[in-house]
Length: 601
Image (tube, rainbow, N blue to C red; front, side, top):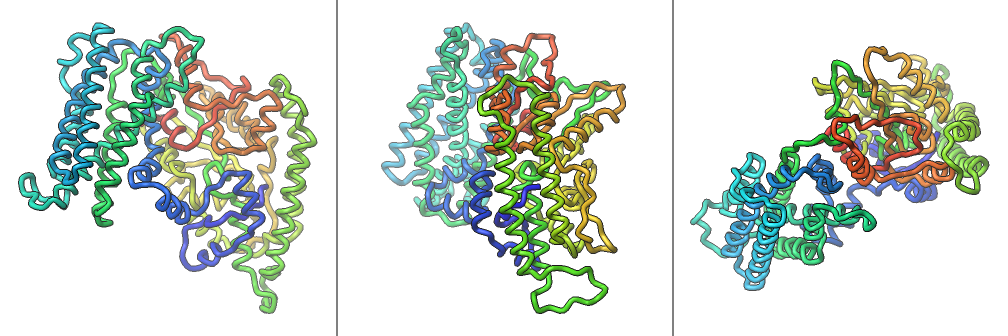
């Protein structure tokens, strides 16, 4: 149980508009500080709009997609230093074609720009591309890549080049055809569109360069691709990426909202084409990504387990149920008929929820303090399991207080389902599960293990994404006809209950296939399952999870650096050998990372 009251939990009209108006400031503050829940999207967008330029806004909006380029087999192998030279040779050949088109696009953009400063800036950026081509020449000499520059262009590179040059030639929806750009404004607009199609490439390479540079081990021998990494992480390349963004901002100042929307579409399309370019690089070596690469549906079974609250959702489900209860409760002076389930007034409900929440928050921290060692210990799963029995007892007592208080009485099942259907889920969560369950080439099962009091809320949340195949393991409300009685059928209340359910599910699987288990969670309640799974992935930034795990010897490893390390250790022809109870958990900042690792692009 986690009683929290964050803002904007539901996307709704009518009844739920009033839900959105409910605010509990002290609890919201606790929620934002301890759970890192973002503010409402509209407020965030407004703040971002006022503080950063157009190019930066686009990067923020589409940044999560960049991880698909970073997690590609090519990028991971390059970062780890064991990319085969044949693959790098092929990449250089394609990149040479691309850079020549890039230089030509800058030339066309310079012709369209009507501002002398913009022309100078574009000229400098074009010169930087020429320097990059010289660097590729040095690769050819240093690694004997002769013939690479003459290789035929592949389809992924050709798609981006065609798109880029068409844009730079004015072949964009709503723009006059080439040769018909009569006014300086029309020409400047094409220059802006061209920069919109080029900027994401520059920013993506600058991003990858810095990410890979941070992983270079100074105590290790020379990284074979250090020169490539040094170039794209260098101050000069980072400056070129920033200059491209500044130029896009400058050229876009006088454009209309509709024209800015066109630039956003061009930016997004360019980002997708760049990801396809990285994903299309042909490898002649085994890699550990995507995880399903070694999956054989005839002999293997992929088991995906996930928590729900704050793993899949933006807010905790108890807050949603609380708000429904308060909004639909009778007023203090409102008469209730004799055949209705007796309910508190909305004012009494609000006060009771506040007391329950404060008591839970205070006692939760005390409970954590009572079993966490003062000094770090060597990882020992059994000791951690035993310690978490205290937390399990606490969670069950907290749930009993809720049911005895009567605050869950009188909720209509239809209100709950509508709230579930409109619940805001984490960006990328639905897409990840959709790709798994809809794939014909995967033998995969998905199980959601949750403390949520009402499984109907979870099922409704996923049904909005046409995900009826997910197996939900949660607590359930009891109903008289369609109205909740206030009681809960308690199935999953604690870390111990969760791991028991996890093990039972695996026991009930047919043993004719080899199972690979992945658990995705965010809190202390998930830690036992995270450790038991072959791969445990932590999403979010729960300070209590980090504290408990660290003090009990659990290591939290950022996912991509962890994969780079594992790729370095990967021996050709041998399984990547994922297994649980190692004391290592991987951390991810978004569902895009999880998607890219497990499923690829």
